[in-house]
Length: 293
Length: 334
Image (tube, rainbow over all chains, first blue to last red; front, top):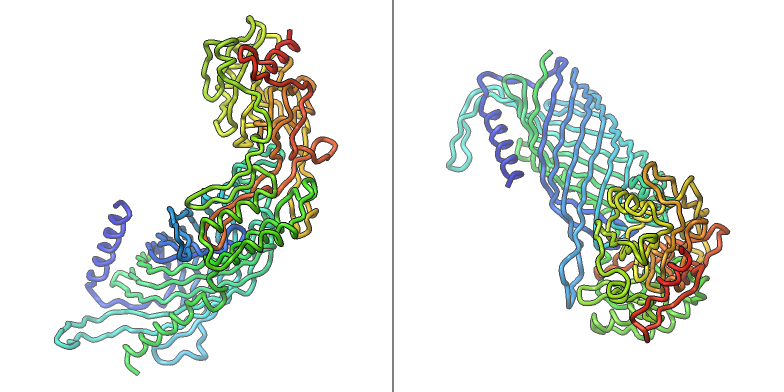
C-alpha cells in the first residue's frame, strides 16, 4: 500500500511536470547538471548453480538516483540504484508442490558513465555517442529453505563499452494533429528518444567459491557474520554483462525533464566453481531536475 | 521514414538487445526421476566431506540405487530411494526435504539414551530457575551448580551468562548438562566457552572440502576461544554428554579437550562435526549434507564418529531414582 502510494505520488509529480510548460523548452547544449530520481518496476530473475539449478523469478521494485553533467552533448553520470524482490523458484510440474520456497533478493549498484558525441555519423535529428560504463553491483540474498546456505552475498565489477543513439522528436511549431478521430493541439515541445547499449569488456566477480557457508556457521569463532560468508568467497575474472536502456525524455520549460524508459540488465558470472546468472527488466519513470548554478 | 517508424525500430532494437536467453543455459527444472537422482548423487560426490572416515564407496552406492530408479515412478517412491541413498552417509547432517517428507538418519537411535529429565527434577532439583535458555540451580547442597542447556538453537545472551555465573560464583564446581542436546547455532558455543578460559586458546581445527577429489580439503583453520571481558568461571566444569549430543554439541565437546578445567562425563557424543551445506534439486526438493570436517588439536579427524568422554558413565534405566552420570560428575567436584 505504501509502495503504491509512492508510485501514485511519483506519477502525479511527473504529470504536473509534463503539463507545466509555459514556454518553449530546448535540449540543453550548454553546461547542464541534472539530479535525477527514478522509480522502476519489472521482472527480475536469478539462478545460482551453487545451490540450485532452478530459476528464481520475481517482480522487483527499484529506486535510482543519478547526477548528470552535460556539456555540448558530452555526458558524465554517477548513479546509485537499489532493488528488492521476493523471488519464487520456477518448478516443473509435480504431484505434490507444497509451498514454494521463496528467496529475498536485494541488489544494489553504483555506476559511472561517460559518453562522448560521435559527430562523424550525426545526421539530421540523429545523434550518436560512444563511451564507457563502470558498474559495481552487490547482491544480498536469503533463502531459508537452503539451511546453512541460506545467505548469498556476491559482488560484480564490470567495465563496459557503451553506445547510444538518440533521435530528436521535438517539434517547434504550434499546430493540430489528428489520429483517427482524436484531434490534438500540438504545442512546441523538446523531446528525444534514445537507445543505449552496454557490453561488458572486463568482467570480475567476488562470490562463493567451492563451498557455500552461511551465517549459522563459524570457522575459528570469527563472530563477524559478514566474515562467515565472505571467507568462503573468491575473486574471478570471467563472465559477461549486457545492459540497454530505451528512453523517451521530454524537457520542460524550466530545464527539468521527465522520462520513461525500459531498462534491461543481464549478467552471467561463472566465478571459480558455480555459475551465477541474473537479469532484470524495468519500466522506469525518472524526474530530472536541472541544477542551475 | 516517419517518427512512428523510428519509434517502432527503436522498440524492436530494444527487444533484440534484451534477450538474456542468448547467453543463458536452458531451464533445468525437471521432474524426471533419473535427472534428479544424477543431480543429487553428483552434488554429494563433489562436496561431501566424510567418505574416507566412513569408508563409503560412493560409486558402488550409485550402482546399487540406480537400479531402483524407473521412468514413471511416483514422487513418494523417488523420495524413498533418494532418502535411503543419502542415509548411506550415516550422518545426521544429511537430509532430503520434500513437501511431504523429510529423510533423516537419526544416529542417536542406534544407542541407549542417557538423559531422563524426570529423574533430575524428581530426585535432585525439584525447583529449577529459568534464565533465558539456561535452566539451573544448586545440586547436592550449595557447593555445586547445575546448568541445563538443552539446545544450541536457543540463544544464549551475555546477560543470562552473567546472572548464572554470578549466582554460582562461590561454588566448588559447575555441571553443564548437554545430554540430548542435538546442536544448533555454532555462534552460541564461544558465548559459553569464553567464560571458562583465562586466555585466548586454540581448541581445534576445521577444514572444508574444496575440490572434486574426495580428499581435497582446504588448509585447516584454527578454532579459538577468546577470554570474556567480564564475569568468568574458571573453577572445574563438568560437561555431561551422550550420543544425543550432536553437531554443535560435538563441536563444543571436542574443544573441551584443550581446556584443563573442563571435563567431559558420560557417553561418546553423537558426532556431526561437519558443517552442512544446503541445496536444491531440479524438482525443487531441498537437501543438505556435511562439507567440512572437525579436527582436534593434533589435526586428527575422529569427531564425526563422536567425541569420547574423559570419564565414562551411563544411565541405568532400571533405576530411575538415580542419574549415574550426574552422580559421577558431582563426585568429581566434591
